[in-house]
Image 1 (cartoon, rainbow, N blue to C red):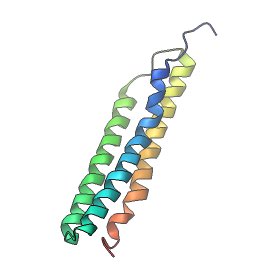
Image 2: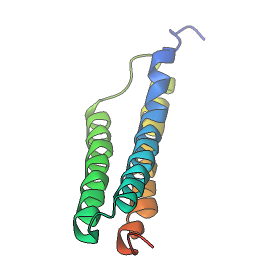
Image 3: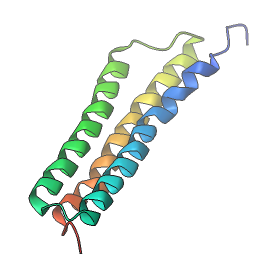
Image 4: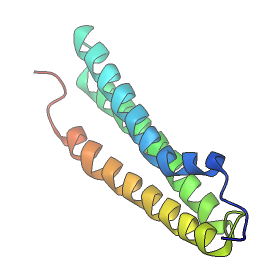
Length: 112
């Protein structure tokens, strides 16, 4: 291989979408536990959970848009175009996983 190798700093883009998913998981469940422990009314608790979920969806969607607008990562042609495609699809998978994982939870009873 005669080209420059891809920088290891570019690999963090593979984890950024699911890192935001993990943050959403921790924040949503912590907020839910705190709300139930302190007997918050279900209406405001449900709205706050929806707002937190929406903020995380916006963050992943913005990263998806930002990375899709980038032409490709600097580096060897084949590796960088492959890396760009994989990052885009990883962000799409994180967005879908966030909706599927946390969306239906908003429809359930808030505290039992």
